[in-house]
Length: 559
Image 1 (cartoon, rainbow, N blue to C red):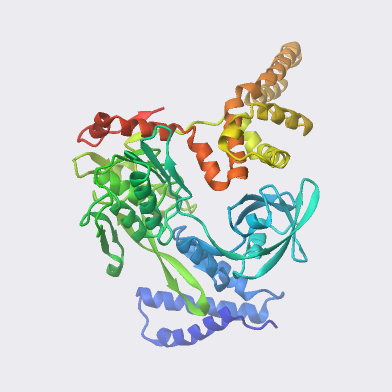
Image 2: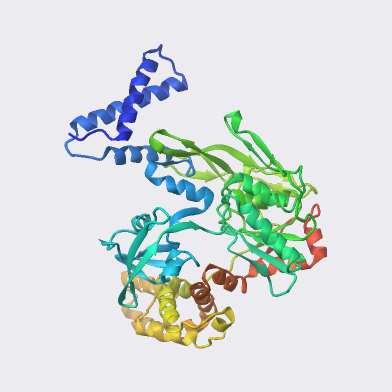
């Protein structure tokens, strides 16, 4: 018979305490129903532990039950057992003990997709494209990216031996783990116009507001920036107090940024700016996307509601829920949703109503009938019910099917790996963009690796032929179908050239990351970004900028 785990022992002790509650006069109160069902659950675990035919792991079983229970609430209420406590620390601080690399699964191994400059993996010589084969003496074949990631992490100062496969040869690296701290502001600088300062802001971890403030201060004082773009596209949010401090960079003290309201009054609070702003007048644009969520939406929404700047991009994610972390027994932790947040106009931007699940478990958007109008400080109309709607809406450019296929199937990534090792002397973005032979080398690489694909038109033709066979038309029009297939096949010879612009953009972004790391990748991406260009133009046209922030102008849309 299997011994009780720590989790099981804890629940048995709880059951003893609950016996007292259950022995009290019965009622339909919420507390009684919770006590009754906990007692049933613990009895069930005890019976399974005693009588179930096979051995089982009580820790895994109970963790699975806890997580399944929480899945009926919202996706942000999460249980973390003791062994996952580092995940909580990483979310709040952006720091962890490890080697400073990102990986993903690649067949039966894992491949390094990014190394962060000046951290252990980079200093040891590990590079993107390396396939991880062994950690110390442990083979990583079929181990899974998540499990490998856990093995790479560890106490700062501890050593690890990694064997990688690079271009068909094995290489061994000795690496000493360090405290890895990912930058909240991985890049800031001036755009080519010489007047626009740009800040890429990726996460709301502890003290990130200081990083943003430092970037704004440097751009204004050292680079004479006359207007600022704060880019929070894809930023998933984080610490609420950091969002307030970031708004405070551009707004004087005493302004409400966000309020929180929950079922429990102890979580009701109003967060206002407290310090002197760095600059209250410089024209400001905040860039958002469908991946901008939580604290990123607070910043964008507060800037919009206070009419302090223009918001540009796509409708944001719509996460208007606040979480706190609570300690549990045996060093486990619970991240639990306690409140909703409301930005200065009074609107809540939560898009999904998790309290009203359908029978199939799905959750619907806030219906249009329940969406309300609010007004900004200047009297502009804004709405709740689903994220921040930008003042200037720009649809993201669509990447063609062929370029997407090359990217998703890792042809571009694998070519970039070979190109990087064949051309080790490139040191700048200019050198990369000057290489006019890159596209031709890619074409040769794809032919060497027998790349093939089916166009949407060919797929539609296959469906048409299947239908023709079923309806006995195929034999009658066989020659027509054959000629059409030959025509489509010959057209594929020109597809690569038609997709050249999309392919080059994706490939150069990857290569810039190889040579110049995260900063280089960002610099390459912003050099050809329609949303950034629209923001720069809108800020430069002071009359348009003022008009957008005036009442009754409404938002604009650019396709």
